[in-house]
Image (spheres, rainbow, N blue to C red):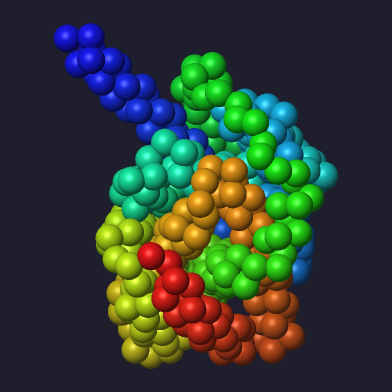
Length: 395
């Protein structure tokens, strides 16, 4: 009986931990996904150019790039539990700051939100490695799909919140502080349950070793190019559709649709990939589907916008979940998972951060969507080349 009671207690703790992970996961995209549908409102209210609007989307990615590699320093001091609690508190503050009628507050709040999200991005794979290694594919699918749910929800209701509910674009951006504060409260008990582990080696030694690792760079670049595609679509899909005569509400719902099908991709792809010794067939499948979706979106005369958006969304969700799974599969313990996750996401988001700005700037220069789309097709080719290499050694 005592053994059974101990087992039940362990299961209950795991359930509470997963619940905490999912509450954190659902907060890692709304602060970003809520901006795209409101781009025209923000442009009209602030007079910002496409370059600066791209910067608004890119600021969190800059924060991801800088803070991801520094996350192990925080976990060594505060542990994973304490670092994630601080992240949810900072995220709540950053989102709330964007409700202030000030351009500086808008950009500062976005930057702080990005710093907070960076911690969550890096540490969820570490928790998966630490507590659920034997079910890493399933748990990665679970929380990456919840991240996609958060993005879909934010993309879909941002315009209605601003217009139909009278919150305005600032209120629509700020409402997500409620969700992050709930995550703060839900995660609080885990601070006392998750013990800090003693580092087995120095941070600088770990970074030097990773810097010389070919597979670490491959994981990082795969993360980078899939994230570049994701954030370009997140930032510019509504603008692309509105330039073709669709209204802001429809464009926002199409972005939401892409995030919704991303849920399916995030739920299925890591789960299937986690069961395979070799993930190259998964990579090839994703690249083929993404190419079809991008061609359909690029050529408006074909019609069927919802189909192409759905295919692109599925791939974005699946590729993101796969990149997180690669981090778990290519690391040997919790400490190395945190370090590889930090490096991969730091380099990855540095690459991704260039996407929205370059994409918007190319459109500003050419006045056509054809030339910016070349950037996305190049990213597809690079994902194929790198993904085939990582997938071969991913088992």
